[in-house]
Image (cartoon, rainbow, N blue to C red):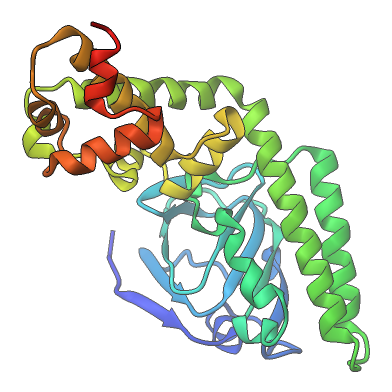
Length: 307
């Protein structure tokens, strides 16, 4: 397949032009019927980086969508979210049969939120940092709820613009994001088997790390390292763990570290410095400080409590 350089699309108008759409009615926000977008079947691989948010549901995509080093085939309708300046690409299969496409894309430039609370709070919605294989799978009822919100945005978008229009649209966008957050939390619970498999793999990964022969050279595991090993994005892993366990990824790493430290303190004669070094710490003081924060005892006090 022919590879192309990443194309940066700065404005929503540029996006419309690139995808063969009429000019947007508003320069900072647009609602697009996915079925009306020009097919990319003549291209090999197309990569984009846009300066605006994209929220969409797509079905029947004529290729593989690639985002966060993951692939997804949009035969089924799923919802995904892309923030400004994130690179994504589509690999087009020129020989695959044409599929019937449906769905919608909501494009929002950050300037649309200027001087509103959502300009700040939109960064708290972690699903903008999820990988494409962590997309939101909607039930029929959930999809109808979101379609209803989109219809409200579309109605306001096509109405006569007045001083209330932007705030009303932003209120609908907030509702869309809040429902999406609720549905993601539902997905963490209902997709229980797959998510608990991730949790089990995390436990094994941390156990193997802290008990490996080369932990000294590898150092302490980071959230990024753990997420990469589990093939998920850091944001998704953190959200998943908070729903399933009430703790974030860093807390899980620290808990496994303290568990291993306790075992070494009670079953070996290694010094505190040697244990800290074996666990990947460069300085024993850092280990002692973390241990006391987690257990309310210094490593030495913990060891002496078993004597």
